[in-house]
Image (cartoon, rainbow, N blue to C red):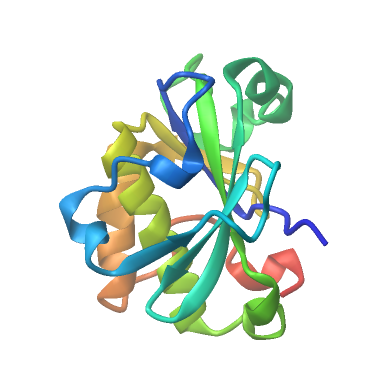
Length: 163
């Protein structure tokens, strides 16, 4: 089973970067472990955050363009600036699927997205259940607010994805 990403982090990175060797930001380096062996010969990697498994995948810049088309009216980005560039997807791991509605899992997923974006100098974040996007600086601020008890950064919470 290939988990479907709920969150995509858009970054101007090379289409050939290795997910198993992301240059993690300092905040993430002590709280995660990477298991590249789980998905051998696939462009996916398992990442463990606070004992919770998530799956990272990637889209090249060319693959991302059609994937994110049609979002113009549902983004918090300036007009005419839809996400472009390679993307790293974040999905809930198989062992957490039945508990994906829990706030703790949702917070770790959003935080992992923040760490990926900080590590890759991201430009945007795209939330698939709500088909909405926002600039990465706004996403980072919204995640900090959400972890402190504020609202979710996007219009549709994780429950909308059927978890």
